Image 1 (cartoon, rainbow, N blue to C red):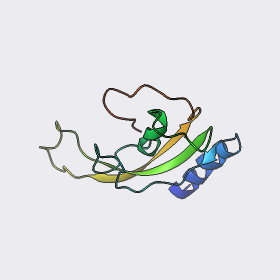
Image 2: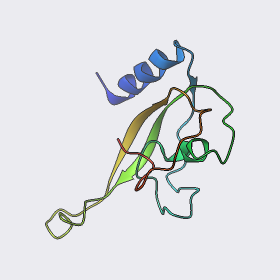
Image 3: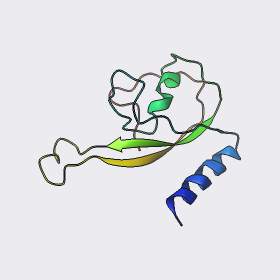
Length: 107
């Protein structure tokens, strides 16, 4: 099975259960604290923080994101960034949540 088929099945599964399929956002984050999108939940951050009312009650997406090595590993080759996709769902996007202490989420 190819990755495109896995993504299609993931989104279909949740869409059949009432989730709104949200397209992948840009890799360049619309967030002054981030340069690039490192996690699948970044596009949902304004909803979780209660800054914006979501246009859906449940959502599912497969978000493009960029992963970089941790600082412990960056000295060892290969210390390169990689592109990946994170699958994410939000069962209650209308519920405002307390901001996490570090990152908005990860895959």
